[in-house]
Length: 161
Image 1 (cartoon, rainbow, N blue to C red):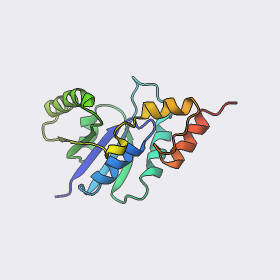
Image 2: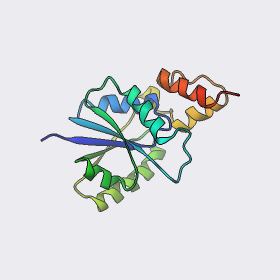
Image 3: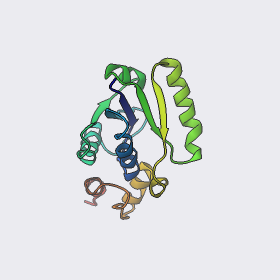
Image 4: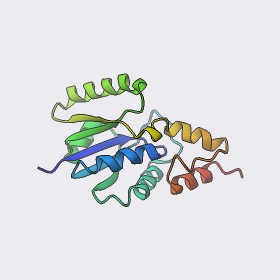
């Protein structure tokens, strides 16, 4: 049986921590779909198409990884692509309560889809997209937290006219 896992998120932007989880998870699943969410409740810095394109560049060297945008209920998307597993990242204990609620609700909505949790390598556990955006907007160097293409995209977004 071929197993498809889905790693959902807004990836605004995709970080080294995200990539760490993607690279490690890709070893365990036949197909890993990075599901870039169009979240109408969040004001994203990058458009959905920009976030998809950045994630595609970052994951280009991983042959069993694909990047897809989606909108709507996550479990419906997982069903639509023939997925079996939801992959979620836990950076800190503070993430657990929210992630546990999501996993429980997803299990209620679609009991045939399992949620698997992974933690990033220790050197990435403090990185978040929001912190990367904040450092970048203040003119800080984010090159150790994101792929060079993402760092360039952030510079372009925050360039002073």
